[in-house]
Length: 494
Image (tube, rainbow, N blue to C red; front, side, top):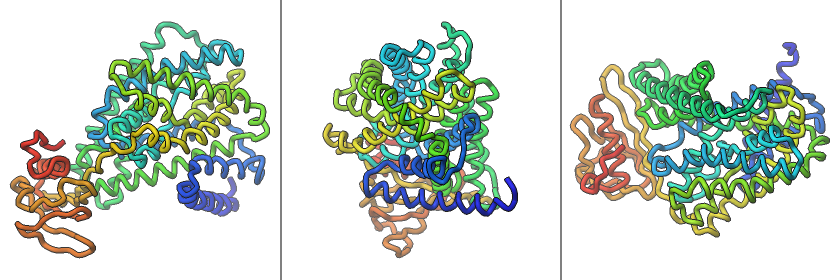
């Protein structure tokens, strides 16, 4: 690219980004999933619109995986362990057992319906088995469904990219597939889990003790740890995607300095990755070829939506005795987005015969399923009676280190529905070394007294020594969930 072209490229990129940001507001008003608008921007810029020619499958695959790493980082950092822990094994089975069942069912059906050979049929099944983490994270957290159900789907979407990616890579290569494939998948997942956990714990420990000169460096360092986890996993021939998500999950639930700044940065970064990815995929798409892929795309979508997803959910959730209403919602909430398209680029980049047809069919399928599933997700939850069980949000706690004083400031926001509402200051029983020094209520600041009572919407400033910091945060979270008698109710904070 010549220097003279730089203003044009930067200006066009900024204009697309601004339009995409405004499209988020538009999509919430009209009920149209924003990813379709981003894809539309890409198509408009491409060969059918402004005429930009882009057909590099290898570059699209590489940029797509880079965006997926950032999306998984944002998803892990913003996932509360307390929300997903009750559904841990459900999420794991959905992302492993259900994935295997979905690949087998979809592959067998498409082998019979579309006349694909077995390797290509299973490759279609693998590409379509992964749910989209960006779509699931953005929809479920505002849908008002019970915490355990949302937690299972969040874990599934964060984890299942890893085994699906391994299977797609193996099937896309012209190597013999035998009984060692499950062993390979098991090793890569376990090694990725270990690498992500170790780097997440080490990164959290280092960030708590680092005296960085600027607040904005903490979010950058946190994201860098997650990206290092991906690279480390790939170098170790393990699952870099799982390492990324686990490292982010560990860091997101650690006592990070300037936590709220880090989460805000991660959220913005996740949006940027989603927008860039969908615009890129729209730019790659060829509308002329998509017309020929409508029939196979609709057939594959019907198989996934009506047969493979419901059966895989039913069979994988048998040990948990999941109520039928929740099973129906789990089956319906398997949202597809950019991930299947990125995965379909892998066989296309390797030159596998028939891969172009797969990519085009996946484009059609993603558009159709997004319109059908995405727009109907909340109404389906309401019809099934699953929207009344959402729990109040936990308090927001942000720690800012005071390095020279060996202390820290905890900034706490009392959320609606919190059991902190109505609690007297002396009922907080913060540990020695911690004290509530300031309350901001309706824009007015005041120093609390022993008879002061907390209210929803309050912002609290707690000063704590380094030794009392963790205990103070645990106590605040315990009272947030169980009220002033938290300890008597078995709630000690976590």
